[in-house]
Each structure stands twice: as C-alpha cells, then as structure tokens.
Image (cartoon, rainbow, N blue to C red):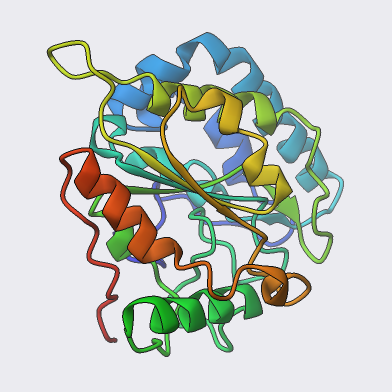
Length: 255
C-alpha cells in the first residue's frame, strides 16, 4: 500500500467528510485486519465513540485529518506481522499531510514535514542512507513496522485537537495487543518499540518488558536535545537480531 492509498473507496467531501459517518456503520471486521479486529473488539465501543466524536466535529464544519478512509490505516497491517512499534503523537494537522501512518506522508507531498526531514537526517547519520525526496514510509510497514499514532484524528491546523477524546483507549489496547503476542511455545514474539517524545514514552508500562529505543521527539523544537545522534535504526536492528528476528531494511525506495 503506497502513501496515498486509502483503505476504502470513500471520497472526502471537503471539511464535512461524509466517509466518517459511513465508517460508523461498518462491522469492525471491515475496518481492519482480522487479527486486529479480534484484538480490539473489547474496545469497539470506545472506537465507535471516537469515530462519532470526529464525525460530529466534521458536521460542525471542521476538517478532520486524515481522510476517513485512512483513519484506521495502521491496522490494515496484520497484528501478527508486527516486530517494530514506531509510535507517534497525533496526525499532521496540515491538510494533505496525514495519511494514517505515523510520520509518513504521501509521495506527492512537498515540502516534507520538518519532523520527517529530521528523521531522514538521523537515518543518514545512523546508517548512511540517503534522504528521499518523498516522505512515504509505507515500505517500512511491509517489513513489520507498525506506524501508529497515539491519537488517530486531528483537526486541520489545530495540533492536538483530538487528544483526550477517546483515541488513547484504542491505542493503549493496540500497544498491549502487540506486546502480548506469543509464539507457539508461549514465548513473547520479537518486538522493539521506538518511542519518540513523552507521549510515546508513556506506553513503556504496556510493553511487557519488550525493549524500547527512547529519545526526544524529532520535532524541530526538540530534535537537537537528544534525537540527533540517538541511532534509533541501528539500535532497533540490533535488538531485533538479539531476539532472533530479521533486521529491518530502513532504506526507502526512490520515486
């Protein structure tokens, strides 16, 4: 799935995204991968409430980001495939940026958001990989990297507008589900969490002891205070190998 693909054939209708109402009528099995549906069924009521809140804000004339078809995009990747959790805060509030995967944008988005530009700088300094002119990180998801935001919707040009509106219960359940997966012998499946910023770091107690790579957020406001030089990509791969898992190829395809 590329950065511009949506989960459903639902077209947003300007600020009042009619697709939000359509999501409310869909069974949870149609909204995400089957194993995610099973894992999140206990919080399905909270999920409906969070979507209802976003729909009401859309009805009030607010532009909700990302487009409705991408709100639950992170859960299209099977839960069983996850080996790296890369947790963000909430979606980009700039119209056209949010695509339902933390830190990622579509291939057409220019300029690349500054936080993502800082991630690319650290990727180069850590592994020597060249920055890309595009900001589509979906190739990482194909290798088991879950690009999940703590909050799954936002209002245009109003960062953090949907914090405390119910999404945290959903993503808490999601992180818990990732951490509690076991193999056929009952052992915890390989997992590394990349946690940038205080919001992300708050999930450490949910990780069941899985290793985490923690630093400040790559935002221009904080990147120079510990993100640069933190080597998250090489450290993550080393921790995966220690657990018997394949490392991630962090190099992104060219356009």
